[in-house]
Image (cartoon, rainbow, N blue to C red; front, side):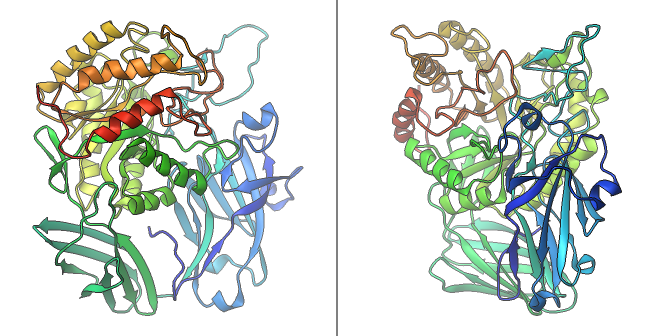
Length: 601
């Protein structure tokens, strides 16, 4: 699916702005709900999560459907073209109605979908209604509890005469922001149009052989002209699929991006795609970018800002990448869902390396309060396999041309040890699917939760061992010597596997402004000593190829006794002010090269 762009053959209409909005308190949305005026409509901004835009517990913690509505018109000059309505994301289930007619449904809150509306348009004004369901359960990704409890709040007591309010209980540690968080756009194409563009390549010395495939609808001839960053044509090609050669190729490098521009023409349609040339390979215990051992420095992040929630905030995106460069980072993981396309395009331009992750978080019924006692076979109970396959395919299809993406993460902190054979049977086909779906065949990983790692049969099948580890916080909290010993024992175990290993999460909750001469948990000083202790161990291991801190910034979570105004593991506060640890990492990371880093002992 192509990102919508304005061109000589394509128009683009942005439906961002103020929409009418109503909370819906029935379990389903009926035809009458769509045909009648919204009940007590409010104003709401799109794109943005709705939860923090209005005051009130019933608004922030709403459970179930909401209705968005606005009107629009299509200029007469565009009515001879094909007209498409496109959503960057709707969280989590969407029903799209145009002029009271259901035209599209979609499940999954973090990937785009679109529907052609040419034949559904009225001559003048059109009414667009979007019904959004934020409920999460055993069939959604991320997973929500169907047992009335979650890892933060614990189980709801089953007491006579007590009727808890209906609300979502996420089996994950971030707030279930909902609504229309990404742009809603209308774009047009000619009747004969370009439908998709795919690039892959091999590099030999200073020459790149680029394979391309252009999917089209209708009749016409395909041609490509490739331009360098000086707008000089460097290659041409004809036909819907083939290869072209780039001599003296400029490689896309971490923190030194270089993007070529492909101008693609088909009949009267024209589309421009920017792409970078770089190679990615796992070789032995190293992760190679452009043939050189790369060291990941960076963060797990969240799409999370005040007021907008998980809504697209391009100012915050620019600021976050600026802070990444200020602190000396070169990468982040899209924890725990694919981020907005706008962020991926920005990372392509800025040279930020990305581990792209599906929303498969909470696939674990044996972790925290979700365990509920007796160990369960997660994969016999959850109903997510088909949806999981779908989001893997859709995420890779969306981001396949992004040079910034160097690895796919198909799940975060799944249960891989309680019933290890079930986990392996579940994930082996998904790992194979990710490789088969990617024209560039990038490495594939699964991010592992803190567990009895000796029982894990799933992580060893992946290309890179990615671990979330909290020695010194959740495990041996306050005892950093014991934490170091435990960490060394685990790294010794994984070293025998012969694969590269990195941390995709490690950290300690820290209240900004809380200080102590003797470092104690939650102080800024303890956060620094925590990281110093971890790095004293990890720097001794040559196969340890990266450190992505949890988290870039403090972020919102559900209410609970473990969280005070959200998760405080950020190196920056939620409004992006640096804690003491930010200056520690700035000194550390600016002294560590992006390539060829490992102390020799």
